[in-house]
Image (cartoon, rainbow, N blue to C red; front, side):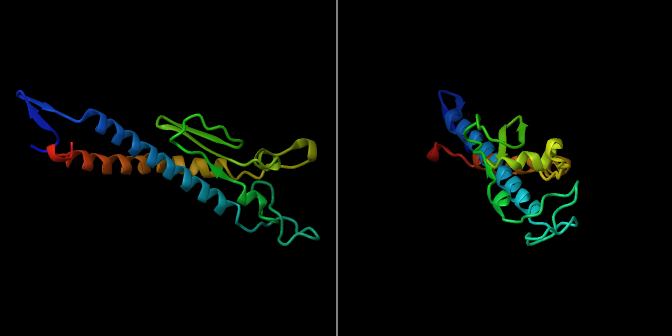
Length: 166
């Protein structure tokens, strides 16, 4: 009898173990989405620009509408991803919410938001690099696919439970 044990004519599932396995699978999936999102941001911030090449900069700047070009690498290295095991993550930057928990990535650099949204006071037009990535993730349904894969793997493990390992 796979999955549980028979007691007084009833089939008993190890409820606590199954609930823990379910939560672990979802948290692992959301954490993987966080890592993928962070990797995508770093990739977006590693592109070359087609804007003006200012004296003293190592590369041409980005044109409005393009992701910012890394001149020092500080913005690219400043991104961190929140841990899905802790659902009240606070971070600057864009926050993505799913029914599985909160996925947060952020940068503590003051100019990170100004580059994404623009800053009219300083005549800086937007150089979006977060929203296009989040939109692409959502269009591909990547977060759902990643979490679903972890849940599917967990279901295989649940179906293999036997009275010996309950």
